[in-house]
Image (cartoon, rainbow, N blue to C red; front, side, top):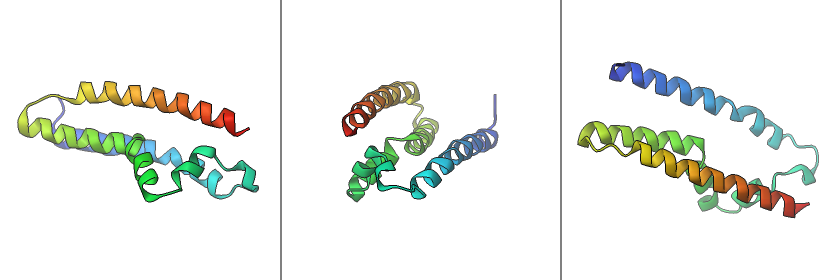
Length: 108
């Protein structure tokens, strides 16, 4: 069993690695040579701050933030909710992928 400090370091390392994977994608989107190369989902997300916030919360950074908060809540209350949250998040992720496919196909 890992100590809380070891779990915190592991959590930080995994989060930083996953967030680093977004750097090439962000670089590609910011240095697109043509306007037509812009991602249709990115067009929706940049319409307002609410859409931008929803994109972050429903993505991997939000997943790890909420998972961290739920873990803190489990330590305090003893109520285990992480498995339910992970299942709901995976369902939302699958729906997002399907919706992204439909929006991308319709944009061509």
